[in-house]
Image (cartoon, rainbow, N blue to C red; front, side):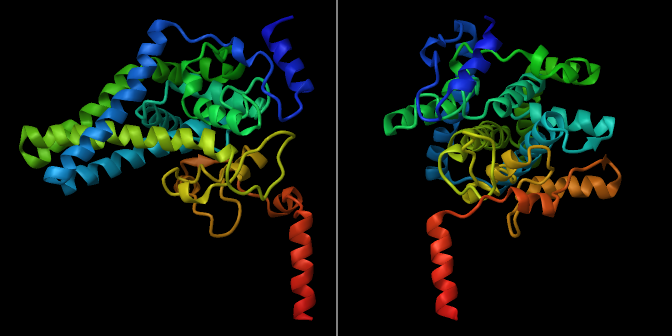
Length: 339
């Protein structure tokens, strides 16, 4: 039996609460992979502590904060609009030059090359919260101890496991696209650019080398750390806490976590996304802030994006989760009081 056949079998017999079959058999990744992943994860986090220590004594300049904000928005939207909604789910069709720009912007987020990122996320949707999901917080069971271990795994532990996602199976379209293959190969160079540009901008604006170094810290490393952990929180928190207004597939526990909506550019409306994966808007209800959808709307009006999959209200109402017994009882009591 092949690995994929075993994953399908495990998924079919999974009861929704037990630890995933064979979960403990995923050995740690090789030393080189662990070292590289550890550097990408730890160095920005250490920089965050360094930045806080420096800010405590001397403050942080407006230039550093503005540059950090600009690079956070550019790289963050590169991930949410580009990597996720365009390349993973095909929520819209973009002009060739816009595809390249979004792919490069997302690559500058230090979250892996485009093709690997897309393959992992497509696999996550294929096996959401079931055996085969690369970063489900339910891998170790639904009990308290298992949940805590699972949250750590879903947040960043999965990146250190030897559980490779075959790109030939999950992202063959991107492998066959020469432009996207070149962007994927350029990932290390784009990461270097992601740190070099803030340094050069800070140096040019302040006129001092120190200004370049503080911009490198805040708009480079600290910005990377914040964006990484916001993205990883969608993998972890947005499957454990929050609301579930829409129905999803069996065992899929994706949730909406509103406090992360702005920082994640709308990605934390995760239950809405899992209910309608190809929809360009994840905040499916009124007043759900979704900056990524707003940018896609701008692209559409400029003629840079076509075939955008916007929400279908009738379909959404059909997929809206039925209220619980308690909620129906409360609503009935309220109606009787009004009468």
